[in-house]
Image: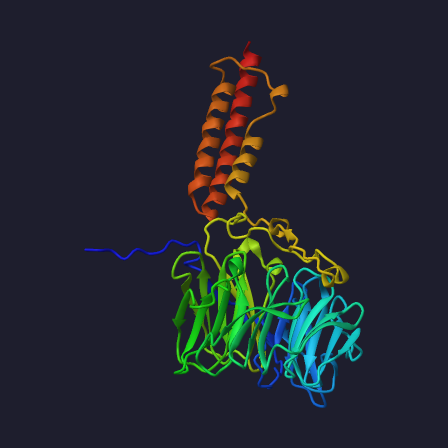
Length: 485
């Protein structure tokens, strides 16, 4: 009789858990726009959310610590004349955020430390170049001040934000609306999915197609795509029967997918978030009330289902915290900011571990905030690999070795200093008393190791009282013997 072998993985027991109610952001009017973007962006300083606004588009930016009920009069970023469709914080400066809007413009904003104290309507830079609404923004992962924008005019523009100019304009590749656009790990390639049912890998500086795949999913609904490990591509889409699917592709051989899995029949577009440090991809569907997560490996079937976080309320958007913003001493491997109808709720993904020590296998060196190449150098053809940082520097130890501290304290108080003591006769009362004290101290240490806290305190008091009584008796006995002699 054959047994089913369970695949070993340190992420098998990852679980999601929402934070307590007082750590959520309440009474926020999330935007009602029907657009398949995240509607939320987050970094270790701030969380930003697109909100409903009259007379134009707006979004709010809150310090992470400003939880609870958000006042209706809170200042907003309100420079756009049309609804805001996408926002994204700069990975190299936590105070810089970009926004794209229906008014066809891209704006760059600087948020002061501590958040806004008055409405912000004047951007640092305004980038005009699209003829239709701008719904996709993505900062370059390693080059400083390089931003990609994609609009409903089927055009991708690469901006040098520092100069405020469009350096590369890719306008002859896509024949229909662009569904998604993202960079690879070092920013040397761009991956796009399009309404013309084609998946394309582009050279961003030349604007040419490196390779493409026709109909990665048979359905007519939007396809989303991201680069994963070793340059492979993960896509989410729909079958001809409107079943949601996830597939993994090797761009070196685009013929057949490495794996293709059907998930369910829901209608929401699945937004993929990939963690290169753990190899886990999280799928968050707009309108869903769950987050599925899979582990991507080199072993067939390559995309391994791990588990699913479920809740009662559906999500209108999702923010994903960079790795450097996680609480590593709690074994967090991901944190999402789930947008409800009227609030934002952080959801923490945790690997259960017994030890509170830093878990090096969960936290390899990760991408830091330092860019590796300047914009002009990158546009000239220079690539730069991400500069990695250790998360151990941000680790705060929480382990309190109470047992060791208590025992050490008892040993210091129960044993007199060696320089002040004289060796008594072998059978003197003082020697007997010290022997008794040693036994009592040993017994008290055993009590500390095994007894509950309230009993430890009581027994320690009794032991100290007993030692004082016996010490006084020994002192009186020694005085009596010396007077008789």
